[in-house]
Length: 259
Image (cartoon, rainbow, N blue to C red; front, side):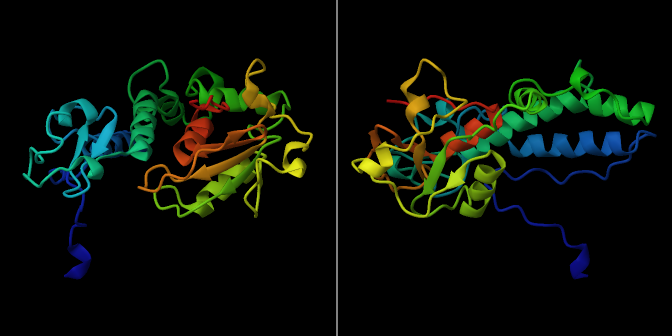
């Protein structure tokens, strides 16, 4: 019957069929941990089989490797399926790298560590105090920022989304901008415009000793595509990749941009 077919994984890293889960009396806790373990198997390098570090996709065959594991194969062939691997096809998958970091933090939550808040709630059947178990860095900074009634992450910032977005869908980026207190620009800002440069706002969450605090308008482009727009970094208008924007959200910090 069609309803009994197993979903097909089209990635190069195909996991072995997962056995049926039979949690021994721990219910949702055991199901969550088993599901995360299966996800972790998908995030392993096709060559060294460890968790991916700086994941790289070859493009032609879709096998995924750590950047160090594939460096000797560029210009020759994929070590798994022997598909030609040209340097122009090699892409660092920053979205997958962010997923790996998130998976690691979820592992800390669901396994026997000091951060096992989910386990504590499931065992006590009560809502435990989240501060004892919350994920550090971004989530923690976001909570403290909200409790202290400080401006949101992108307060004082305007974003123009230029070009085509595939890895980070434009609709999702727009929602993140709005959630972070930023605003979307319909027209591309002109760095040499007097109107653009005289906008009197300051990015609250930029480092106070950085010239980035005076930058209020960002032209965001999809850095995971082959398109590389002309660099813009003039006064209040800077160009930034979409992966930088995602990293800012995850770390709850207006991260510095490379020169």
